[in-house]
Length: 114
Length: 114
Image 1 (tube, each protein chain N blue to C red):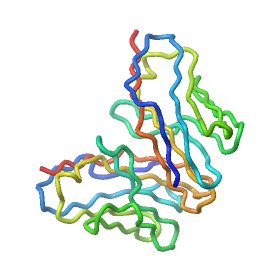
Image 2 (image 1 turned 90 degrees about the horizontal axis):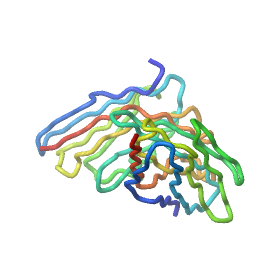
Image 3 (image 1 turned 60 degrees about the horizontal axis):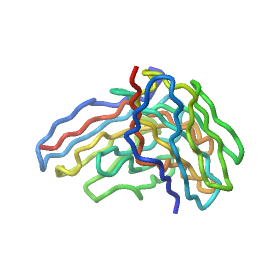
Image 4 (image 1 turned 60 degrees about the vertical axis):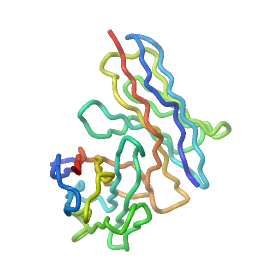
């Protein structure tokens, strides 16, 4: 079945540090891949997405590349800010299914200190 | 409003009582999803509605859970005879087309069962 595994936190960084949050997936069909972010006290927001192999999603300085050969979609940012403190969720939908439901990883709590 | 709305934002109930949670999706979105976010289980899919088709209930954890969607718009998630393990944040999401698969999430309803 479809599933997502992401590194569990918490991750604590100083401002301007480099961030990587690992995410790997298992899918039976043709997945689209996502990173969602949940800021404190707020709902889930789409951060970035990629719909096919080798696509790179990017937003707000974050990037992730869809790697079919390693079944990975790692999230990176070159210089984190305090405002990036949030919980990050890797997710997929399987386009081989018409369901469209999201399969989520367990989430990674990121805290950035000034 | 422009986004997905949910009500109530918080609900405290006693064990054994029934509760109803409401979701107003983005206007024109044909697909509607319910998810549950809890500390122990992460983000779990519950149920999916697409247009006038029969809903996919494969994620509902027990027969105490049910949901309906009236007129292809507003949805209500009902939990009968609530148990303490039902305590969680219940999230609703909608999308324009499941094949597009970008889902927009509401702020959630935090349910606490005493």
